[in-house]
Length: 127
Image 1 (cartoon, rainbow, N blue to C red):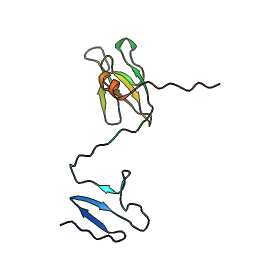
Image 2: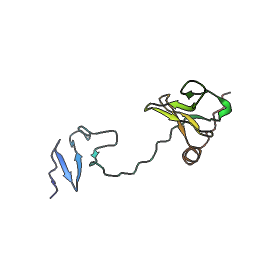
Image 3: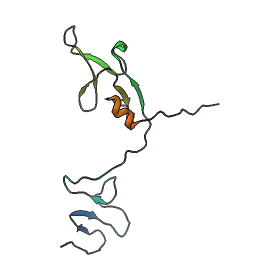
Image 4: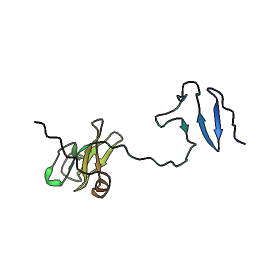
């Protein structure tokens, strides 16, 4: 049965979700950037992407090594275009968008995913 005690700083378990309250300050205790709810392992929660402006260009083989795209391994045989991301090197194919993220990181994105996720931003014209 769920614990319904409401005391300052008390951890509560309500319907399998652990809620951390601090009634005195209204802040979470040991919480995260998503508020005062801590979800159970494996529980699926829906999130919306924050509106962030990124820079990107569409890569094609005739462009060569540009914007972080390099051919690996070095040499003449078996080389393929890759880009080093935060996690690892990822393959790049013709038409992939190379995105520069909010922390300066670069990563490839397939054209269909890019079209579904991003739209052009009109730059402000300075006088």
